[in-house]
Amino acid sequence: MKIVIVRHGETPQNLKGVFQGQSDPDLHQVGIERFKEVGQFFMADAWDAIYSSHYKRSVASADLINAHAKIKRVISTDFAERHLGALDGVSKAMQLKADPTVLDKLMTLDFTPPQGESGYSALERFSRGIEVVKAEHAGRALIVSHGGVVALFAHFVLGVPRSSAFLEHGHALIMEVSGTAMSLVRMNVRPVSVDFNQL
Amino acid sequence: MKDKLIEAITLMLKDKYQVPAQQLHADAVYEELSLDSLTLLEVSMALEKGFDIQVPDGTILPEHTIAKSVDSILLSNAA
Image (cartoon, each protein chain N blue to C red):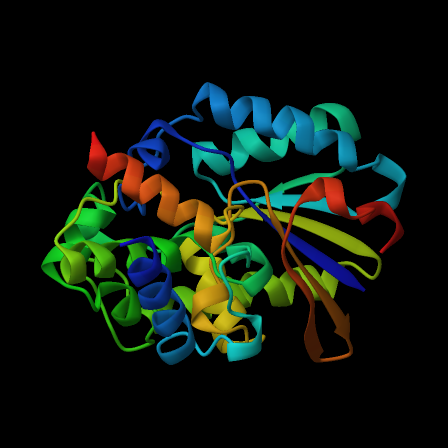
């Protein structure tokens, strides 16, 4: 089977360049317009289901895809963004100035941001969600999730280098599942550049 | 200054992010080097510190070539 993971559309916080973990803003108009376009690339009969996390930015992005595709919708908290604790809402640029290693730390399993969630815990949760999708579908499944938690999965499970593991908004990670094995097909794919319905 | 910035970026991409040297040239596009936006922000901050310049968020974008991003940086700092 094929699993496609897409990062949600832009929120006002994304456009300000701040870390966004457990905060739960709506999509910005930029994100809405992006996912109206992304939705055009998914056809109902090609997909078993479309999953999202319970965060508004993920739900709204998946619903915008589904306004066109009409795929079975599932919401799973396993696909939520990592809880970033005190980092949530902090400017990425300012934090990088204060601590140039912060992105490296966030991509290690044993690092826990103050009052946040460890990389290990976030990855374990996300992987559990993937196992459910694998168990319930045999064809193609689409997941609308979040940059940080997907980066952990891409790096530690699929072997994507840290410098390539962060999905851009509306871009996709495509992976193939065969039995218990999972392998990366493509990373950070623009929807316009691939026919997802023929994977 | 432009040549120094291009040299600094290519050196950083090769040494820190293991981009193959043969792919690194002024007209290389960041996303074709498989570098994501967080990595480019990290590069931006390293340039700010190393050259004592301003590299506002969004100055180096995945769809930019190295040369174009340096032009944007120089434009930002000329203002």
